[in-house]
Image (cartoon, rainbow, N blue to C red; front, side, top):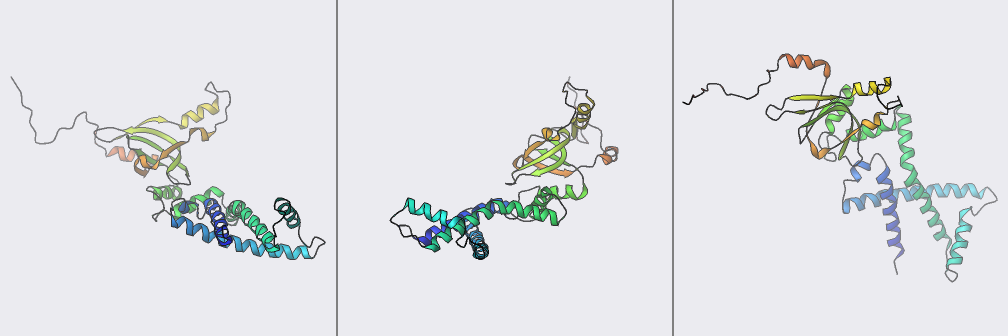
Amino acid sequence: MIKPTVILVLVFTILGYIFCHRYHGTRSTFRKTTGYHTFILSSGCGIGLWFLSMLLFSFISFIFTLTPLENGVFAPILLSILKISFPNLYIPLYFIHCIEITFIALYIASKGPRLALHMAAKLGDSTTEEINNAVYYGLASTDHTPEFTGILHQSIIYGLPIAFTLSNRKVYIGYPIELAPHMNDIMILPLRSGYRCEKELRLELVTDYVPVWSDIEDGNTENADRTVDLAKFLINIPVRELVHANLHDFQYKKNFEKYERPRTSEYTPQNTYTLETR
């Protein structure tokens, strides 16, 4: 027979796992844990949730003692269900209370993270997306986040788009909209796209997305709906495909072009001579 302590530890672990998986403050680091790290963090948070639920249960029970429903609402129903299911089993009252406390803890673990996120956004006078991004960017200098997290933070600070160079030399210039919870993908809103030439790695811009959105709004396309849903233009970039990323300010483009060397069809080193053959 399974010991009650084993069941209790399992309950603590499940409660903590649900909470850590959903809470914005632990979600990013928790999904990177494995083995005993996941178990210890889950069980620790689960114990805290269960004792918090026990205090909440004690307060609710005290309130019910002041009303005609001294035994509460769910305890008689739960006790009757257990007696019907197990008629010959003695069920102590503390066992019923443990079940009720567990249900309270399960509700807190499921709904508490979202409530905490909205409260943090309200207290900080910001949006929930900004709170999530602040958590990700706060981990930028640690080992819990992949590369390029720091440049995402700089983009928020300076309000500039980022030029992402992929492993196939494709380049997207746009604003980072969302960093996936597992931090393996970056969702961006592209402004320009192009490629880097093979020999000089010079940036060649090909597609301009902004005029496309203007054409849709002006009705210059076959689409009768003139409202632009920018979510349709978002591009998901895997972090593993990124080779380089830098802030890109379009207003300084001419300044850089002024000092760029002209494009050459083929590079010829200096102090070389061409041999003529007859």
